[in-house]
Image (tube, rainbow over all chains, first blue to last red; front, side, top):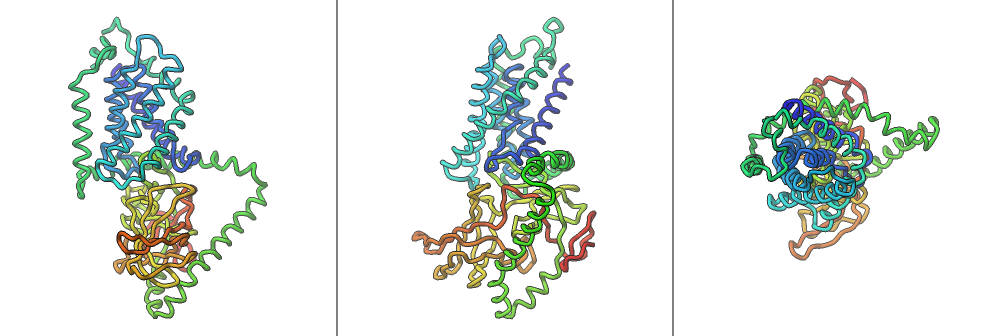
Length: 170
Length: 299
């Protein structure tokens, strides 16, 4: 079950990454695209909790860091998505999350994720843009992610929930 | 693994050790990759070998879909006319843009060698199949030509409007291109009208207000508004070949702090809508596709 879950999670991340890089630039606003990989990590966090989401966030972040055309210092998206997985996972309640909770979690996660990435760039003295442009990118990113949530998260949540192992087997 | 997750699907706190290990792994990776000769590069290439073909295939699959809106805008014949006119227009514009530069080049007599050198190049055509998100704060694209097509790092990438960027790294089937609007990008530029040399820096902003900054080496030289800036080119023919139009000067201001003239450049290339590009390779390069020779022939 665990291997199957890891496999499905990996497939979800790869599909999200490829769509993000090859399809969404056609719809992008000033090059800002919805962060589908982050949405997958949030979906994992809401169904599986912080630990699984943090591990998945690390793997997904590595893919974002290394797959072409990425050129920033590797490990930055990995760090950002580990934080996202952890933070989003803490939101989880025992009951199924309501649409409102999901949207709020996505918005907060998107803000935190892009901000952690941007801050790591500032610390590494990566020549970044000014704070106003940076904020604009972060906020448009949040908007994109929230807009895409109704399309992306239901299937992701359903998939991960379906994979949740039967408690009696444990 | 299944047992641990199965029994307690993270209802409470996650294991602190796991989190600490993940964060430390990220920090180690960042430290390793910050060095100039990074041990991460082979991994990057390996990941690129896997993701490259997937991106190429996806881009090919979505290309008809992204063209759908254009069918509604005009009928086929109109569409073709518009394309022809656009091609003619950009051709004329680039002729006009390099006119000053060409005249000067002739006058200064180094034109002969420069022209001879530029005739020695051919273009490998490629399509953009992936664009890095603005959220990553770097402007890079993936193109569907790699080492099989004769590409290697530090080659110039152009399209029919002007300079696009340079090749950063290649896999067998794809290459990553650093756009000149990236904040890391520095291009040697020359003002066509006055032949003053300087450096063109990217601002890291893609899209409509993507601009470049030109800093002239000679503090006394003032570029005129509307002047064309072309690449200066290095003797070793890398990373940028000379004489490729970069953009037009839109405004000039002098900076008191470092007593140099700065100009804002509006690039000729629309970086938000990149599709077909050409990679400048030495003539006679072995390639897996038809190469456009300097005289316009396909080989």
